Amino acid sequence: MSKPLGRGRKAKDPGNDAEPPRAGRPRRRGFATDAIHAGQPPDPATGAVTPPVYLTSTYARPSFDVAGPHGYARISHPTRAALETCVATLEGGESGHAFASGMAAIEAVFSLLKAGEHAVVSADSYGGTYRLCERLLVDRGVHVSWVDTSDLAAIERAMRPATRLLFIESPTNPLLRLSDIAAIATLCRARRVPLAVDNTFLSPFLQQPLALGADLAVHSTTKFLNGHSDVVGGVVVSSTRKLGERLRFIQQSAGAIPGPLDCFLVLRGIKTLALRMERHDASGQLVATFLASDPRAGKVHYPGLPSHPQHALALRQARGFGGVLSFDLGTSKRARAFLGGLTLCTLAESLGGVETLISHPATMSHASLPEAKRRRLGIGDGLLRLSVGLEDVEDILADLEAGLARV
Ligand SMILES: *Cc1c(COP(=O)(O)O)cnc(C)c1O
Image 1 (cartoon, rainbow, N blue to C red):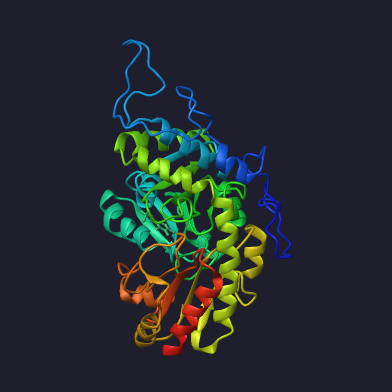
Image 2: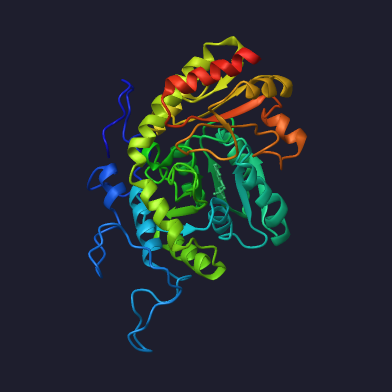
């Protein structure tokens, strides 16, 4: 593990409070070293230090009864193999499986279920996860219960004999609610139900679900892993060989795989993940503190604030709080006025890039939720989500101040 982030907090290695992890491989060297080198030795063919991009759909075979390292590029290709090894190493898993988008990765995880089987999923998950489950999976006979997974008793109540997956997001999008990954993993293990964690918001630098006992870690690499808002991609890391083999089969059969250029860009982004996450985390804390101290900003949701109801859990299961937060201006009129005052923060979907992005979940990322469900979850018309970027934080704060002046 890398050293704990400096902020005087009592950071522990993830997993210290958990039962012995099933996988969660111990790290032989530091996180930043693995981010730069894992899966990426110099190219055996040319000596290239940077993983090369082979733009080819097929690879010549030594003979019809002897396969080479790669055959057809849907099944595998060198840049994807490098990316999969790198992310699996960073998450402490057995195998990595890269996909064409975060949603393709999540769809592959749900493809572990057959018709008649059931999943328990965090109620305030990413809007795309909700749409996948309610509009596609139901027609395949896979049923989902939406549960507040911060409540262990509620998870137990929702479990059925047919439950074959628990899928949680922690922190959630956009309200930054947490679920206790180690406690849920213990509950899942007793029932032999695989636990998958969407770890997009924190990245393996700040949180490692497999070390806390989860079976699968899922990412939209579009966000922090790539980090430069120029790729759409996803990845699943498995802690066990069995789940990994099944995911590999789904990946190769359904074919929602990323091409070499996208894999190259995500690998390049990951090389600076440790540095970027330290800054996202530090600036996120400063911006959250600034907004929380200003009554015009309304309620601020950020696990790093002592006022966050699960601040203690955040300290226990993650090494930092990340760069995403949300705050509630109360009404759509006030949100519009605030956005009208901004000149630096860009109104756009997505998060986790070098630039500060702001979004209005009710009409953007969470527009596919029925209005009643959205309101019940607390995603109101005045809620804004901020992905704090890597600009000088003084400039971000000045821009937010200009927005608040319009409210
Ligand atoms: C963006 C996002 C996804 C979906 O990923 P895509 O790459 O957009 O398909 C899934 N989960 C979370 C938490 C996300 O932020």
